[in-house]
Length: 246
Image 1 (cartoon, rainbow, N blue to C red):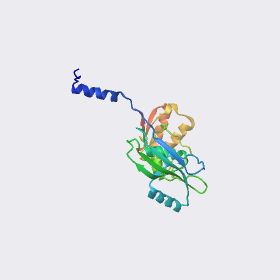
Image 2: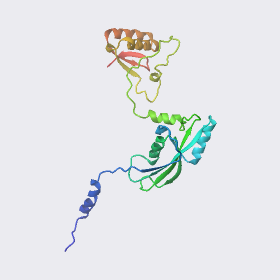
Image 3: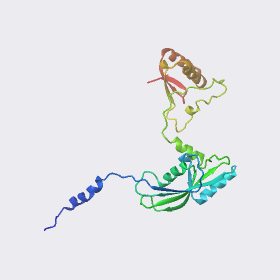
Image 4: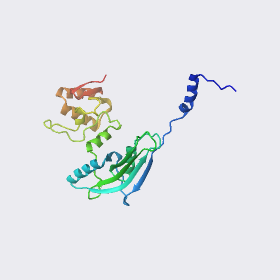
């Protein structure tokens, strides 16, 4: 019998077809926990769990001691092993597990292999650092945690947020809407659109007080005129001007 002769291009296509037809298979890592205490602790937020080697842990422990004292409790040994492709890193997986146990620090004890190779693993000691009254300490730098949380998608804020306090004398600068006047990363625009035909009661009074306090007197008179006509306006909080909505 003559052997079947297949052109090279066709052979490559046949070899590639089965692999390309297979869907992506996600395989979670193997997580093994060896408890080091019988005490059960309340869960802590995973993004507050700090990870470091033994030297970094010793430095953090010393810094917390200098700030007023700290209690250390070894909670568990956590081993995370790669079994296949997964969408979370081994460190993130270990942090989730540690947070559920009430630990807020992971000390790296051993590490082997890259995370793309099955059989690679990370071994951590999960530790709870707490005050003497049992409350978990904030181990990570607060600005790092708050920055992470600020980056998460948040619900859209209303276009106009009314003042919640009585009107202060003009000589005392108000800070109720400070976030609107300052250049901060979460302020998309300093131009505020308001439909005066649909605003009334306390909301209108708060808006009028804001313009009266922050804007020139002429802009306040313009606001009153637009309110009488039920116009749509735009407040430019940087230039402190009021104009019609386009």
